[in-house]
Figure 1: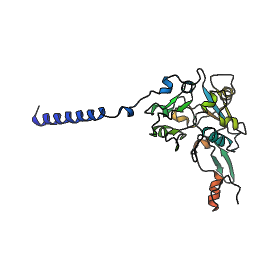
Figure 2 (figure 1 turned 135 degrees about the vertical axis):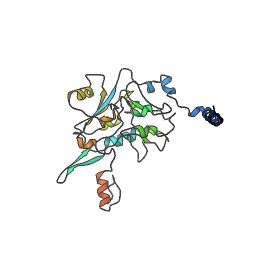
Figure 3 (figure 1 turned 90 degrees about the horizontal axis):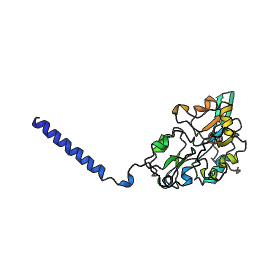
Figure 4 (figure 1 turned 180 degrees about the vertical axis):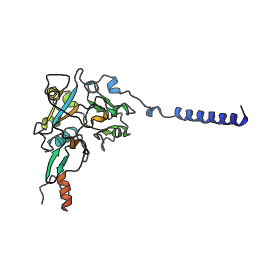
Length: 263
């Protein structure tokens, strides 16, 4: 080996050793982990209901865009202003003069293969045995990896807890035998929730008896939130455009005072 090559190898070895020493001094509290204290302790709130596979069907022909689900979710889960676990954006489809308004309720899809779980560095995001995907706010760092990994943009950063947040199908309610708040409050009966493992459940019959669709099927995450009467035009729409009435108020120079009765 030449002197030049020997010196190069020696210096390279020093660089590698220094890098290894740096990695070894990183705080163990920030080490990647897939462990979760609640789940490891077999806390029922973390484990979920054995043998169940919760899912939801939303019949868009029955949704009237009243936002009762949005309000019920906010009240039930103490959701801060300007963020939502579920909401109902409205769209204008077609071209003048043949146009129509459409609604597309939005919430976490509780995917069978959730991309948000695999990227979580702390194990804070995980799927329970009954398929409900949840976030443990006690060990979430708020790094935002899951927000970027969700192909449906259904997660947000909670300004109160300073961590990631999303719909949980109201896990605390379904563990008590109740329906999610959005389902219970749905005026048109558009949201149907139940056990997809039970072939006699209404949600199973709806999924198997008539064509149902999921959002962004190309993502391969296998959503457990299904839609009936989902127009192909809606698939291409962004998940959260402004309310059309708000746009009209802006166009007409009116103040953005939605939900008030003041002149």
